[in-house]
Amino acid sequence: MNRRLMLLRHAKSDWSNPLLDDHDRPLATRGLRDAPLMGRFMRRQKLAPDRVLCSTATRARQTWELAAEALGAEAPVEYVEMLYAFGGPQPLIGAARRFGGDAATLLLVGHNEAMHELAAALARHGDAAALKRLRKKFPTAALAVIDLPIANWEELGTLTQGRLALYVRPKDLR
Figure 1 (spheres, one colour):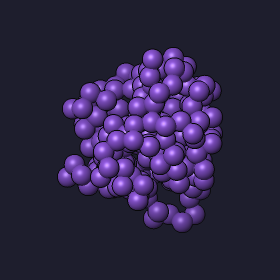
Figure 2 (cartoon, rainbow, N blue to C red):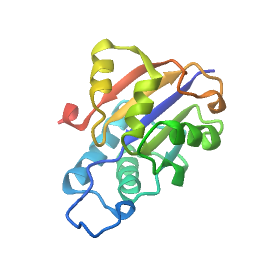
Figure 3 (tube, rainbow, N blue to C red):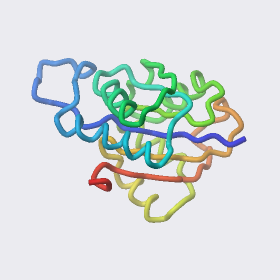
């Protein structure tokens, strides 16, 4: 059995309060618009996850809550501190291995550069134009869907060679 990993970067965050701790930063107006936009797209494309792992940061939580409402998803969600990671894909891989369970489709909601690096490492095959866009940039509220040749999440690693099934950015939908 193959697994599907969906990576959703949090939507645009609000930087208007420089005294606010990074973890507590909420979504900006654009983020409040883009998160449900991505959820509606996921609903139209029938991209409902079986399980969601989300960073504990306010902006990531808000992104998932708004996207989930628009998606109509009832997937169990777990807020995982190790997804509040920025450099390198290892914390995301660790979270998927530890908390992915038996989900056929797992969605991670997190931050860059970790999201971008994981997507670029795993997406080895697929549409050439989409792969090029993904490798160039993983903007806020972008979604990558990667099909993986693994039987369970414990097999996931940076050497796993997946197929990019979809890569979409909010600007692609406007």
